[in-house]
Length: 51
Image 1: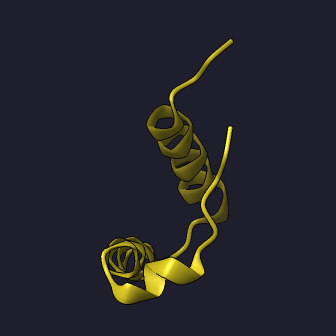
Image 2 (image 1 turned 30 degrees about the horizontal axis):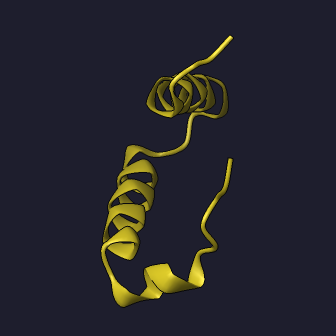
Image 3 (image 1 turned 90 degrees about the vertical axis):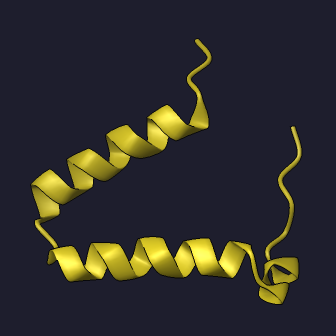
């Protein structure tokens, strides 16, 4: 069964937020930080994934 990555991330994120109950500001900081890191020059430090 092939599940799109975006769908898997939404499901895992929703379950994590429901079960762990982190503060919403922490969730926002992680999401915005990941978005900014992906678009920066530091993204070269993240190894590419191969299929």
